[in-house]
Image (cartoon, rainbow, N blue to C red; front, side, top):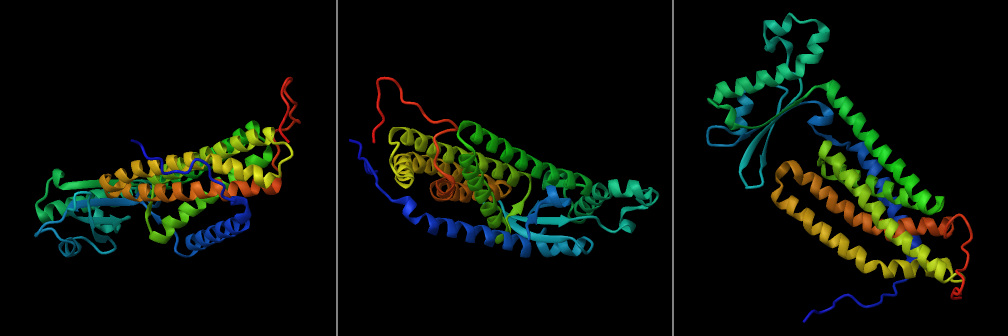
Length: 329
């Protein structure tokens, strides 16, 4: 026998507390921007450039041993993979040109700028292999991105976010009205800023997987808002004389079970990535969980509250009654 835990009909007055919700959202957004301006983002190799090399930590390969074998200016830390194994993580940019040999010294300045990152990576990996008698199989990760490529990746990532936001604005404006589009995009920006603030607060590595997480959150947020908007339009057509606050409350309550079920099942799926995805995907998946939570919140309070302030219209033209049917008062 199935037990139904969710009430058949909820009557939560969401719009009664809309100002509290909007104030909390503004505080979160301002706090996130402040964190990014003061703490900054922990840019990964994709955006900051440089190299990352990972080794399995053993009795003979420790953080202290690796630090003693490589030149200064390289960051060496410990980490843990998905299976609980200890790793040695080496992060570095470009090492001194004098260490890269006569062939590198003979290059022109332009050639040095293009090849410095790759040459530094080759030098460090070769030094580590010789010092600890390692093979290619012992190098668990070896990523290298030059400063020119990292700048292009960062710029293209921002362009992707901007294009996605703009296209969704046009989609919502076309399907509903500009007021709904403003509300939907405001919720989208709210979720993106809040998620970037989490990256800054926890210093989660921000790389290309983070851009993928933000794009996913943006899509989820807009989908959540559109479901509520669709129900608002439907109820507005049915109850033409009903106050807008009541229309939004009814629409939000009617979609509440769907909202929580969708969010809950999505979080369960993402939790599998958190647990089994390893350190490379862990930051992205944690950010996605946070984005789903604030995306659900923003579709209820932030987006709907903005639509209410701008005016809950059904569409651009007055809705005509269907012959044979009369709208309920």
